[in-house]
Structures are given as structure tokens and as C-alpha cells.
Image 1 (cartoon, rainbow, N blue to C red):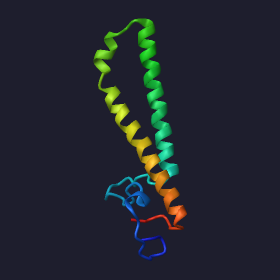
Image 2: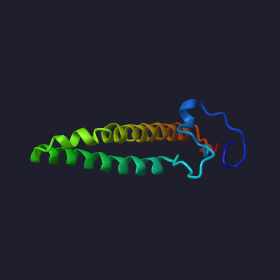
Image 3: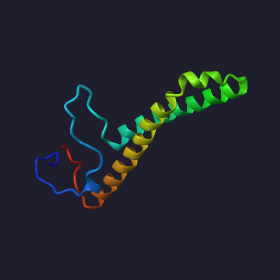
Length: 106
């Protein structure tokens, strides 16, 4: 469904990221601007993580890594998912623009 109520056949590439609310309390960010904001925010977190590792290396406190190892995969998964979602939605916006289609609402 388009925003004006007409039925539009989108391809998978034109649809982009999930548009429904997922029945959750927090509505997902599914515009390219919202996903870009989240991706940049997570990039700053990864930058802080890299800074922390450099500080650990400089001060020679490698035992800290043993207690916080789980932070690395916990940070890298959302980071990569956010950037993948941004590029997917950006591609979908470009494809919809070429066919002059509205943004899907569901």
C-alpha cells in the first residue's frame, strides 16, 4: 500500500527495509535518514571502542580485554546491521524515485 491508499507492486529491492512497526513499543527507524543517524551513532560507539583498545595497549593493561571481550561482538553486529540497512534503504529510495513510486507504508 502506498501512503495515499493505492496498491503498488514493489520489487524486493524497491521495498527496502521493513516498514511495519513489528508490534513493539518503540517504532523502528525505517527511513534512510533515521537509519543513517543510528549508523553514525553506532560508528561513534565503535570509535570509542577502538580508542579504548588503543588506551589499553598504550598503558599495557591487557587483562582488561579478558573481562570486556563481549563488548566487541555486541558492538560490531549492530554497527554492521545499521550500515547494511542504510545502504539497502538508500538503494530502494533511488529505485522508487526512478519509477516515481511513493514510499511504502507497510
